[in-house]
Length: 157
Image (tube, rainbow, N blue to C red; front, side, top):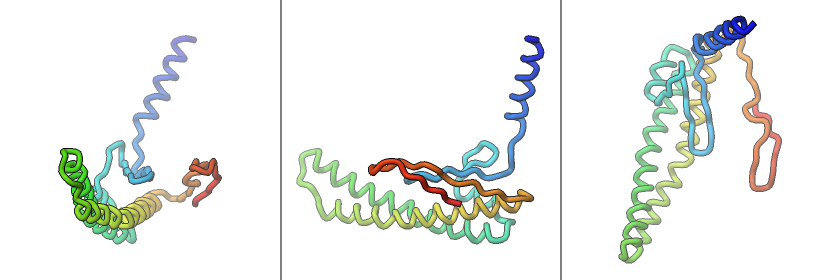
């Protein structure tokens, strides 16, 4: 009996780790969107190469990469400007409010550009996954969310 359970456990474990699906898994959260393919994290350029031959997904991913290439330098520059102003202030110099305000403006501008990147890249992943699956089943994205006002039920298809 003990040997049978050990054999069953080995069989179940080998099936779990032995089969890597060809779907792109994505996790979208506040300020993050992570894409995984066969257990590896994809960067936008790698994902663009992967979805290149799927009609519709290649156009969505091109838009996503364009937005990514815009929001990254703008967001980094805004964060660096704010950090430089705060760092000078902490070092004893007078706070440079114009520099801080410019950095804050750049950081705020990068937020909608990031949201566009996330939207287009998730759409590209969905189109890619639909192209490789014979029947595309969409499950709700998240059922229960928590916020400052409490719990809410939201079903997104």
